[in-house]
Length: 209
Image 1 (tube, rainbow, N blue to C red):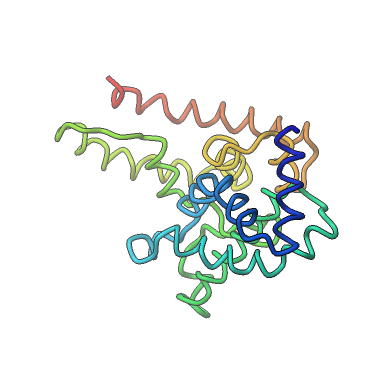
Image 2: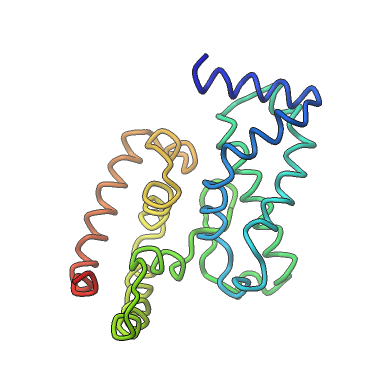
């Protein structure tokens, strides 16, 4: 039995009320979903909310709706669960910001149901990596601001493709489905976006020395 077949079996077991199967499904995809939440959590909520809080809410709702998914699995379980988590994250944002949500952050995706987009703060932090010495830490703070500005200047769709492929580690088929693009279109976008990103990162190379 391959991974896809095993996952399908777990979905049907979980939908039938098997809690162990449900927990296994969630654990399989937990780390990928945490990365997604950390990338997309509004920067004004970082430090106040943890990705685990969002995932717990998402899991509760997913458990309630799993029967509907099992009866008509139009996409992979991971993408379905990711979408559920993204919707819950958007709900968390609305809960905290209410009518101010539009002005609270520009990092709201216009793609696939207006799920929160990866914010430039999180992307910049991941791109710069971990620096340890005091001098590097000082440079990192300066470079992070400049890199955030560069990321904000990118086409939103290109920035989203980088987040999906490079950080969430979705494959080309998953990325295409999330963005509503053809597989070739998503691949072309990723190549173009990474070329643009590499050009931007050239000025930050000395941070790696």
